[in-house]
Each structure stands twice: as structure tokens, then as C-alpha cells.
Image 1: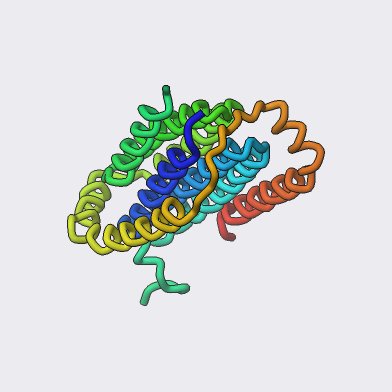
Image 2 (image 1 turned 90 degrees about the horizontal axis):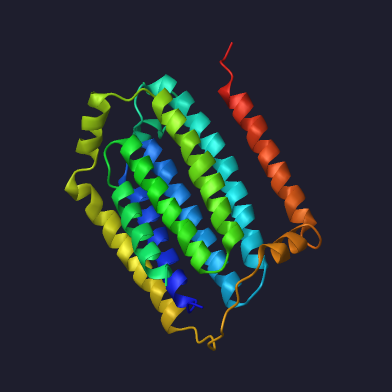
Length: 102
Length: 162
């Protein structure tokens, strides 16, 4: 079996890539995609830990993370569609106020 | 040893995906990254998780994403605006923060913890299913409640306002 540090390092790298995308991109489509990348990296860490300790808990937690990603994405995408109807652009910065821009 | 090529592919395609200007191209790269991740899971002995990664992530979540991106009807103007938002200076400060955070986590996790080496074990799917539907049944119920809340929320937000 592979030592646990290898998948853990891959998980860290993917999480950081997702964080970089989240911080640097302004388009809300890419913000949601970066969140998915980060959740996926967290799932990989659970699987790696499950392998390291030979326990089923890692894969169970992965299934729950998958669930969370699905529920989060459904709500995020529907908010994106509504925002697009209101703002006509996908710029995250134009939605920083909780009311319509003056 | 399938782990290393799959890991390199997952990392590389993710890096390409977050730097595309066109959302559809980015999502297609993301699909490749997810399939590589499924290979990584397979190499770690989690065959059931690998199947779920392909079916749920690449098959359902990214396809939902693609549908919404196509409903957004992005045009060439949006694509060129995207290119302006992605100019080089935008990446500098986030990259510095991410490198600092990554170095900190890597130091804390890989240099400071001294886990004794352990052979590791591939967990068969039967064991996962047995645990999931016996001792962890409450987690399954909570997950179903979460999905129901997501469904109700999406239905409510998706209705046209009267």
C-alpha cells in the first residue's frame, strides 16, 4: 500500500488549488467550482486516513461529504441563476451589498 | 503503481481548470480531474468511493453544473471580460497567501507529527455498507435530511417571484 503521506500531500495540494481559485477568480461559476475542488480534497483526505487506519469510517465520511457537496451545489447553482437574472453579470463583487446597487 | 500518474493528472488538470476563461472548458478539465481522482481512490483500495466519484461527481454534479452554465447563456463579451478579470496581478496576493498557508500546514502535518509506519489496509465495500447501515444509521438519516433541505431550498429559490 502507498504510505498515507502521499495522498495527504495530494489532498493538501488540491485544497490549496481550490483556495487559490476561490480567492483569485471573480466569476461565481469558478467560485462554486473551487468549493467543489476543496470538498473533493477533503474527501480524499478521509479516504487516505481510512486506508491508513484500516477503518471503514473514512469511506463513510466520504459518502457524507459527497452528500454535502450535492446539496450545497444545488443551492449554489440556483442562487447563481437568480443572481444572473438580477445583475446580468456573474461578477461576485457586484453582489457584495445586501440590496440593489444605487 | 497507478497512484502517482493519477495523482499528477488530478493535480495538473485541476490547475488547468481553475485558470480557464471559458467555464465550459474549465468544467471539462474538471471532469478529467475527477476521473483521475477516482483512479487515486481505486489505488488507495476504496473501489466503492471510486465508483461514487465517477457516478455522483463526474456524472451528476458536473453535468448539473454544465446545464446551469449553458442556461446562463454566456457570450463572447463575458469571455473577454473574464480574461480581463484574470490578469496576472490578480493572482499574486492570493498565491502568496496560499503558499504561506500550504507551507504552514505541510510543516505542521508532515514534519511535526510522527505517526508510526503502518501497512494500511484496503477497506472492502461490504464493510463500509455494514457499518453505514448498522452503527452509523443516524448519519444516513441526517444526510437524507440535508438532501431534503437542499431540495426544498432549491425549489423555493427557483420559483419565479409573483
